[in-house]
Each structure stands twice: as structure tokens, then as C-alpha cells.
Image 1 (cartoon, helix red, strand yellow):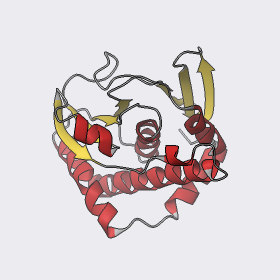
Image 2 (cartoon, rainbow, N blue to C red):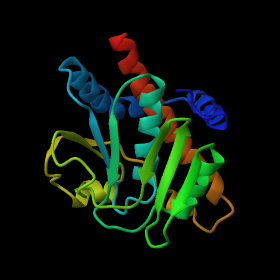
Image 3 (cartoon, rainbow, N blue to C red):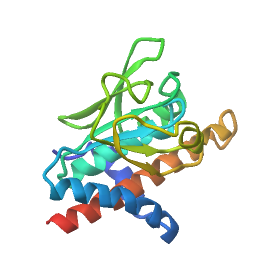
Image 4 (cartoon, helix red, strand yellow):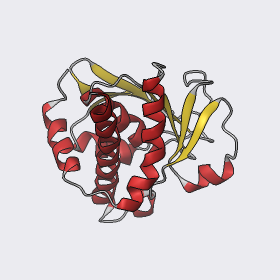
Length: 205
């Protein structure tokens, strides 16, 4: 399954971004977890967790699925928070700008169908990390923000807890830099997820 044409251009842009050695060290725990699961032929469940499940965790869930899909690595990608809000409209707008096809259903905490390939999509909305649609055991809890990481000391059922934190684009809401900063963060997350799954692919191929 090929990625949507315009989305492929965003991926090409993300692949040009440099990842610092410090960030590579942060990502190594996720790479190790993925390799261990593949070596043991076990299902890979990733749950990206941030306080409101509105921006960073949604970006991470989506881009992890896209990267894994691109390298032919089967995973289940989820996200959640410690409070329910909504998939922030500014984050949704950023994903549209980068080439995802997104349909919206409902008004209060809408359900978004995020399409990345002809037969590839995710259903995204804000939910608790332990919502029934998310795995209850045998998953990696990937903490994408400092607040959730510090205030959620125990993630029940997680095999491993991995801090992969990102800066909050909310700081730029309502400013002239809003769209630029949301897209910048999304592409950073894309570049790091592609880096992770590229290394896993090369190791297993």
C-alpha cells in the first residue's frame, strides 16, 4: 500500500531532518523494545500517552503507524491521556496540511478518521490511556509529555515505560507562528518514527 501522494512529500521532507545524538539515545529504548518483540514473534502494541491526548500523543500514534506501514512492520498504534479533551483542531489542521485525508464525525470530542494510504487509516479521538479500545496489557507506554510522565507514575498493564517527550505546540496557539510550529513538531515526530522503524527494518531484513 503506497502512501497518499501529497503525504509522501511530507515524509520526504521529514526524512531530510537531522536527528541529534541526544534524541537518538532517547529513541533507543523504543528501538530495543520493537526488536525484542519481533525476535519473540509477539504482537507489537504501542500506546502514546500525553496529558490531554490532544496533540503530541495523536501525532505520535499516527506517524508511528505510517512509518511502520512504510517499512512493512505490523504494529498496533494507540494513544491516550490522563484527561479526556479532544483531538485539537489545530493539530488536525496540521495533519491535513501535511497530506492526510481526514473525516470528522460528531462535535463533542469528535471521531476523526485519518487516512494515510488507499487502504490504511486510523480512528483518532481523545481518550484515557486505559480506555477499552486501547490495550490493557502487553504494550509499551510511550510518554510524550513531561506532565503525563511525572503525574502518571504507574501505567497499569504496560510491559515497559518509555519517555519520548516533545515540546508542546500549544505555546504558539493564537500566534502568527501557530501553523508553522504545529507542522514543525509533526515533522519532527515523523522523522523520529521513520528513524526508529528504519533501524528495525534494516535489522530484520
